[in-house]
Each structure stands twice: as structure tokens, then as C-alpha cells.
Length: 147
Length: 102
Image (tube, rainbow over all chains, first blue to last red; front, side, top):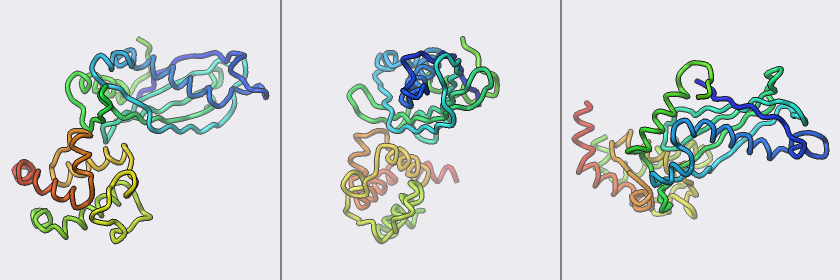
């Protein structure tokens, strides 16, 4: 399994009254990593719409292990699991950059709809090709590289 | 499998077991699933991910393909409707491919 990584710095407006990153902001980081990964495979939301599809999130989970604080540099990494069904399952981890300590880990599941909001049960055509390339990348051993 | 497909009662039981196993519905027994109750929303209360799991289980067991939600809405009406759908589709396509697969 190969992770794709991005780096973020915790901003003052992202922490709560206790000086810890507000729990909802982890999802925003997940999304940044997801978009950065998908950009490499022409699977950004607008590119999927051009193909006639949407991929709404239907499930989200997140386990919080430790908190980050203002100024911390964090690594947000993501990968896509090999699916058994016609859905995209992203795994996420957030690590403290300096120590690589795990701060949070999460997962989202996206189903695939046509732009007419009809759910598809099987992939086909160009969408299938692009997702296959994404899955090949994520399910090959190796270090993450940002292309 | 041939025997099960052509016997509606056996097929109903098989489908109920398949649903319980593939969706891990341990709290529900075969006897509790009504042949005519909807599988989604007000019936068994299945959701979109469950539909995807069922599509894979049906293809694996019967080699019957459910392409999208339009077909799914019809096929997943109830156990009885799903059984009839599988019998019809199997007669048209699934049988040949399953035999060819050995």
C-alpha cells in the first residue's frame, strides 16, 4: 500500500479554546490530501462531472489519538483501498511531522452517482480507467511521491 | 445452484441467508425476513453500500449482473421480486456463463 502525503502547518484559526486543533478541521485536512491525490489522476470533482459522475461521501470515521497545536507541522497522508464493491474507500492518517507520531486516522467511503443522481453498481469507460490508475498507484509498494 | 434457482422456496431461503451473511446482519434471522417486505428503507432498511455488497454477492453466486440503480430499484423490491429477477436473468445469461466456468 502506498501513501500520498501533503504537509500542513496548524494555523491559529484552526485551534479551539484549549489550543488544540478543532476536531472538525481534521476532515478539512483529509479533503486537502484527497484532492491533491486525485489531481494526479484527473479525478477532481469537476473532472468527474465532465465524465458525467459524482462521488459523494456516504460514510466517515475518524479516531483521534493526540492533539496538534498552533504552529505544528503535520503530514496528512491518504491512500485508496482496493475495492470489493463499486465504491471508493480512502484511508487517512495525520502525523506530527517532526516525530511521525500518529495524531488521527480516518476513513471515508464514496459511492458513485451519475450527474442525474443515479447510483452506479459497476464501473465502465473512462471513469473505470482513471480509477484503475489511481488504485494501481495506491496498491503498489513504494514511497509517496508528489508528481 | 441449478436446483436452488428453479425452486422458489429454496431460492428465497438462499437469498435471505446470502443477505444476512454478505451484509453481516447477525441480529436478523432467516425467519424474520418477509418474502414480500422491501429490502431497502422501510423493510430491512438497507442502504446504498448494502446495495453494492448485494450486487457483488448476486454476481458471484448467480453470475447475474445488476448494472445500476434503475435495475436495482426493480430487483431489490423484495425477496420474492429479487428471486424472480434472478430466475429470469439466469435463464437468459447466467446459466451459460456459469456452466462455461465449470
